[in-house]
Length: 75
Image 1: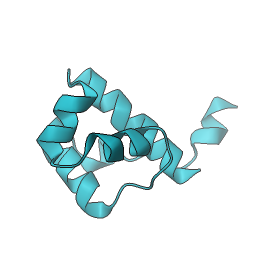
Image 2: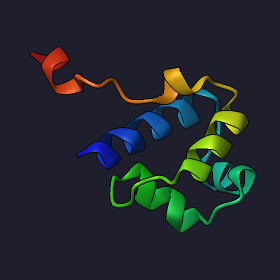
Image 3: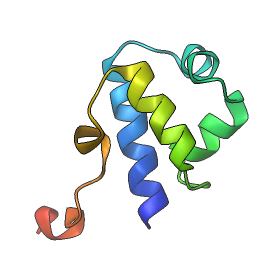
């Protein structure tokens, strides 16, 4: 599911950059519950959320975007 892949990527980059979930939610301007739902793959991140995430974590969108063939890579 695409939203689950987005969630895993966002969570991984958030942790890599040293943000707790609470700190990250405050930084991007979204509720903690929404961030949690996105990271757990229960909610598809909006374009606005992705844009704020890229800005906050200072990563390029191409880095954050899940690979198109993620399942094939696991082989």
